[in-house]
Each structure stands twice: as structure tokens, then as C-alpha cells.
Amino acid sequence: MTNDEVKSNCNEVALVTGASRGIGKQIALNLLEDGYVVVGTATTEEGARNIDSYESKCGKACVGIKLDVSQADEVSRSIAEISEKFSVPKVLVNNAGVARDSLLMRMKENDWDLVLDTNLKGIYHLSKYCLKGMTRARWGRIINITSVVASMGNAGQANYAASKAGVEGFTRSLAKEVGQRNITVNCVAPGFIDTDMTRGLPSDVTDSLTKQIPLGRFGHVRDIASLVSFLCSESGSYITGETIQVNGGMYLK
Image (cartoon, rainbow, N blue to C red):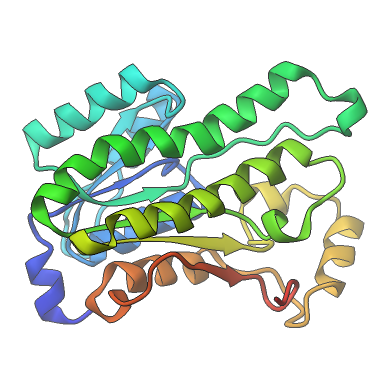
């Protein structure tokens, strides 16, 4: 972002769900540097306190809150509190997500419901309650973090793939609904990214996955966060309804 854009963002709120680690943490840090007032969510009080510790290079701090995105009442209350304390969020990054992997024949219904409720219904709740303020301001950015699995599929992840593919369809439809209000809605679909989660994979699994990636490496959280920052900027203002793949060439349309 330009210096002028950073200055213009100084009173604008960016809400990032699932910001306590990994991709969400880096997105929150990048948006802090872009000048936003950043509110990050976590599922635990400890995670929220961790988010409170984030600071930009100029000392601007992030605000962490505990939130279950699948619960409409919690989301409604949190958006109201953020709006009262700061202002209405005009940037929403839906990053929170869960996985409960299992072959479908063995998958418990509770695990199906949990993944769909968090990964898909959560985005419905957050987008719905943030859109009122964005519409009034006639400006907004909604960025949904999906996955390469939404396009490729993956054995043992029918619930996860269904939830992420659903988000991509949701994104295309919502982009058509709100474009006239100068609100863009896009997806960023990461491939395999170097995070605490992937570092815990056995070395033989990591080696096998790396061989499937033409660039020969896992991505970095900065690869995702930088794209989110771009989509929030004026330079990205003519992009909407898109799913942008960031996977090192692992999946090519």
C-alpha cells in the first residue's frame, strides 16, 4: 500500500477471524502495518491474549477477542461492540476454520456439522453482520480464506472440501449482490503453507507433498497475507468474485 493509503486507513477497522496463529496471525500483522485498527478473533481467552500482543513497527496494537464464529448471537454482539468501541469493520477477513478428517464411511455426523458450521455458516454470520455497515459506508472488502482442496478434493476431507467449495460459491454470489455498493468479495485459496500445523507432519509426508508442487516448496504465510493486503488496497479494487489460488502450481485451472 502507498503511504497515503496507510494514512487513510488509520481509523478503519479490519476484522480477522482465526488470528491467533499461522496465516491469520500474519494477515493481522500485515493489516496493522497497512494502518488499520485490527481486531482478531480466537476460540479461547489465551488465543485472544496472544493477539493482544501483536504490534506494528510503529507500535500500533492489535485487539484480540474470543469468538465462536458459528454462533449468530456471539457474532452479532461482537460486531456491535467493535462498532461502538472503534467503528464498523470495513475489512473482513474470514480465516477461522477447523478440520475433522475421516473417510466418509467412518465420519461422525457431529464432525460433519462442526466443519460446515464453522467454515461455511461462520462466514455467513460474519458477512451478514458486517455488511450493514459496509453498505452504509458504500465501501468494503470481504476476503474469505478457502483451500486448494476445494478445487482438487482430498480423500478423508469430504466435509472440509465441501465447506471450502461452498465458501467459493457463496463468494461469487455475494460479489454480485454488493458490487454496486463498492464492496468487493474474494477468496484466497492457499495450498500447503509452512505453519505450525504442517511442520508437525512426518518428513516422508512432507517430502511427498513437496514433490507435487512445481515450485518445490511449501508457501509462506506472507504469501497469503500479502495478497490479502493487495485485495484490500486501491490496486485491488477492480477484483471481485474471484478465487485466487496460491499453491505453487500444485493445482492449475
